[in-house]
Image (cartoon, rainbow, N blue to C red):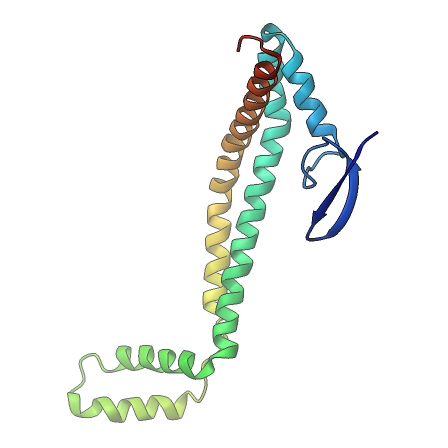
Length: 179
């Protein structure tokens, strides 16, 4: 049995040659053997089995990766808001004071504008923790979650179908068979 070395970022991993990418979800070599098995079938059996394979393998995969994308986006956005609050408190504080000031001076004479800003700065010495932004982001992510899952249900099988069709075309063209 030939062994290929995969020098990825996680170090060298020994795996059978031709077993597909190291990031395969299925056991090593399983995905490649499924593609070869499907490619060898006659067309009468190939398409129904391919559709079943797309549903069995594509739907859970599409849903999983869309859920992972929503989670990663939620974590990145919340981390961004937290870092802005923690790392740049002065800039964040100035934005906070400016927004309070803008809402306070509506309808007041211009002479009281600067006095109102000083009063706000005395009453609010620091910006509060950004609970509202974090909660709003969380609610938004929960709102888009069903839509992302629906796109995963649709795009997952399409991805598997295209990949299997490319593997079949490649297998048939290598053997000189009509496609």
